[in-house]
Image (cartoon, rainbow, N blue to C red; front, side, top):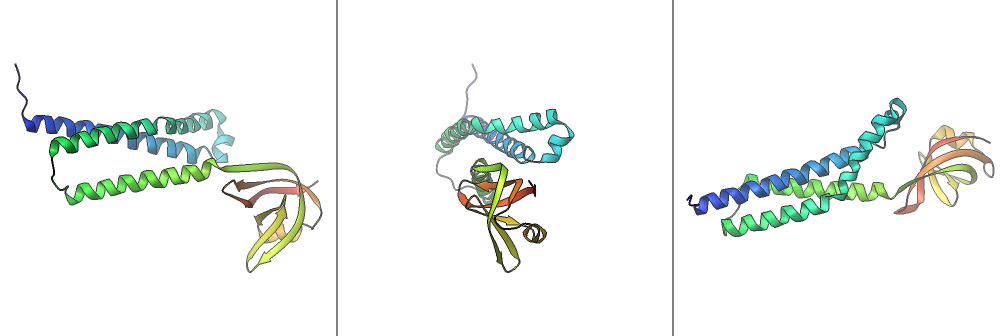
Length: 181
């Protein structure tokens, strides 16, 4: 019969929380990369199958909350077994990096999931120039455009085009394409 010491139990708990952390970080970074690369049109133009494979990694975001709960469980278990010992500076910096990267990725993801594109017939309701920034008013949204797009469009004219906007700031957007109807 094998006897386990407190050190063996502590080492096992440390390894479990470390594996849970690596699984959490791996899935988080993979879904983030899939989300970012899935938005690049050049990849879809090159190979739509490749685009779909890359985009499918964004589905890993669905398991990330479960992995976070598993990591928290193992981390608390490890801290209970270890007792009240202050962490090393290196460990504290790693923890801050992990927390900051996960918070940053989820903030970016939340913003990205609220992004929309509108396509179709666009009526230029107005034009605004603020210093070196140019805007067209389309569907009551202030759409950022280039200087040439600003000067080539006419107020109250109809165009075919598309623009990107975010539900978190619905009154603003960015013009993607525009051409005369």
